[in-house]
Length: 68
Image (cartoon, rainbow, N blue to C red; front, side):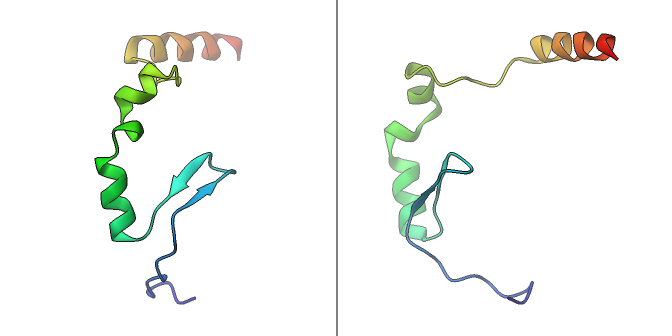
């Protein structure tokens, strides 16, 4: 495929390697954005791990740097 060629849209699919849904059709993207079950709030309620805050991240980095 040419690097400037736009790939053809495909049906929605789950990519197990990325552990994520892949959407390329406009209608699928629009529907997913309206789906409450795909919101960050529903992920928090389901216990999905969330990104750590900056202070926790910096503390982890400091610990890792001390190991080297």
